[in-house]
Length: 123
Image (cartoon, rainbow, N blue to C red):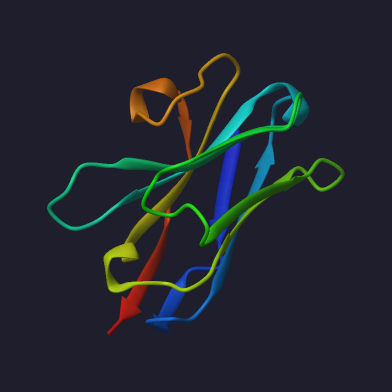
């Protein structure tokens, strides 16, 4: 059974940092794409950052380039999202997603999802 468990969310002031973790189990971690998505109240879920451990490719949404860094620890089956210089518009529920064949910033590109972790950035 595929399981994705997010952690690390919280309340932070604008300009601050947070590191999200996604602990994965139930699949061959190095062969799947892992992504971070977020959903703000009243908005559609959007892709923030992706990583594929097989070849190291990554993707970042324009809105987070230069501020967020995605990384993976294959020994721990965990993907991290380091978020710096946070802005109020980064507020939302952050979801970890995984897929054996998908690769793209749309939610439809990923078939397996975690429960999400709330990130709130105050101004």
